Image (cartoon, rainbow, N blue to C red; front, side, top):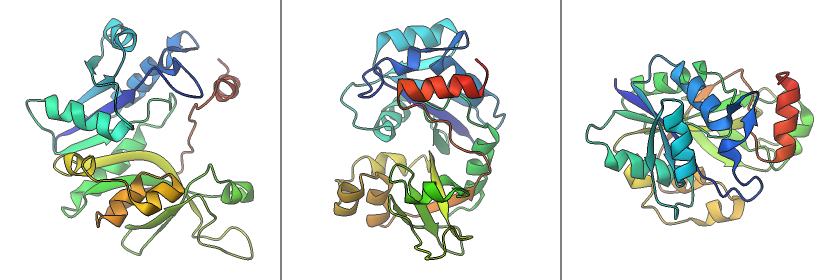
Length: 241
């Protein structure tokens, strides 16, 4: 199975402008994400899809593959789709790797790729069991419920499934990394916004509302995403950088 990883990276983050180029222990964030992705031996190639020449120059500087993409993309999914469209040889699976996760675990990519051994898998993503009650109530932590075949039923910022006794064995949070079968990704970006997506502000609900299936893989590795400068300082302290 041929698989590529694509790291969408834009300069104009609302809460953290220039985020891909911030220094983390002597390396830029985009370099750290790229190097983590390259540790996954199942990937045939890793690309950065960016809207800014400075990011492209940085990727070339450390020897990575990069393509400039339009600045008009609303999300990483559509940016990945543009890069895929520009590739002469199409892979069977595309992984959308978050550009603000400089210390993600590369084995999580293997877990996503394994989902596509099932020929019916269209999209795959990760979840982690919620172990802290505050996360269940926190609307910035997206919750996921899925069926007995590990297919997503719903994602929400609300605490689902509701359990009056607190955290249950079915309380999972979504780890926002996606993989797509190559012919599905171009279809997804053509879909208009849906009502549930608009209410929850969750892109994946658009896919579910349109009948696409999302395969779920579980991980024990937590997210270390950087959304703000404060997040970056916490991360540096966590990893002694």
